[in-house]
Every structure is written in C-alpha cells, then in structure tokens.
Length: 253
Image (tube, rainbow, N blue to C red):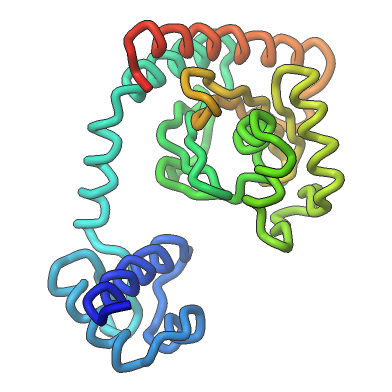
C-alpha cells in the first residue's frame, strides 16, 4: 500500500473512531484504539482540525468530529432519493400509532439511522439520525438480516456479538432462530435488546433485493404485547409495504 493510500485510509478511520465515540478522545486514546504511530496520528489530527473535520476541547488535547463532518453527512441525506418518501411514511405512521418511528439502512454489520420522528410525548433530547448500531441487536437490523441466507449472515457477523443489555442476543444459534421467526411472522420484534425499557417492531422496505432499508416503531416495553403489539405491527407492515411499492413505482433503486 502506498503512503498516500495509507494516509487516506488512516484519515477515514480516525474520523470513524471519533464519530463512534460518545466522548472526545486524546491522541493517546486514539493510539490505543487504532494502533497507529503517535507521530502519524498527531499529523493527521492536526490537518483534520485545520480543515474543520475535527475539533478540540478547550484544552486542545481531546478531539471529536467537527462541523465539516456534519456537512458531509447532511449532503448524503439531501441526495438520497428514497428519503423524501420515507419521511412521509414516518409521519403517517406516527400520526396513526403515536409512537416514535425510525428509518435506517444496513451498513455491513451495522445499521445507520437516516430519519426519525419522535412520539408526541417523547422526552428524547438527542436525535438518533446518524447513529450506528450493530445489526444483530435492533429490530431494524434483524428485519434486514432475515432477507439474507444463513451463510450471508454468518459471514457478515463478527466472532463475538456485542451486548448492550442483559436481553441482547449474543448467541449465533439464538439469532438464527430469531431470524427464522422474523421470516415466518413477517416482521421483527425485539424487547430491550438495544435499550432498556424499549421494545421495537420493524419490517424491511422491499424496494431493493436484498433489502437495505427498514422502518421501525419504538414503544415502551411494557406496552408491547397483546392487541397493542398486533396493532403496531399491522400498521408498520402496511405502511412499509406501501412505501416499497411507491419507491419501485418511482424507479428508485
């Protein structure tokens, strides 16, 4: 690998690590996580800071993504032809069932939230848009994994399935059994696997083969049962199928 290509790869990896961290990171912390030479990290972070892709705290020793990273992410959303239709779908679903709605896309073994519409009584202060989570622990991810073969899923997943709560599926056999349930049921369901106190219903938006996008409804875990769960699942499936048909009709792939 040439030095130019190596530097470019390291630059991107630095941005990904900073974007994935809930707090700013020092050069030492970056070196510990990435294994790159300290001198190389110093030079790359300094350049990224000058270009406003990275910003520092008041001490100048801890770093996070800067405003130009936001510009890049916003440009991706602005240019996505499916998103306008997806937002309309989320609005309609929130109006009908009252809970928080999400639209996400699979990124290898993760899902990335592209749009959210919070419930009317939500107290959430931070949007999920742009958040990236392991594919196995969300209903969104499970809905998309269910459209793949077992071999495709096995190849995609890391050796160890990361756990976010005591309810997260960390066994490959248990995950495969759950995906079979999703295929039979026609929608994915998880209770407190990603967030304590929250349950989610999701289904894939089948305008691509295999599906890359999915829609989910987040609701209080204690409400996700019986007739209420059936009501939510029926609405999510119906609206998502309608969205997929619209995207196909519009020629969006």
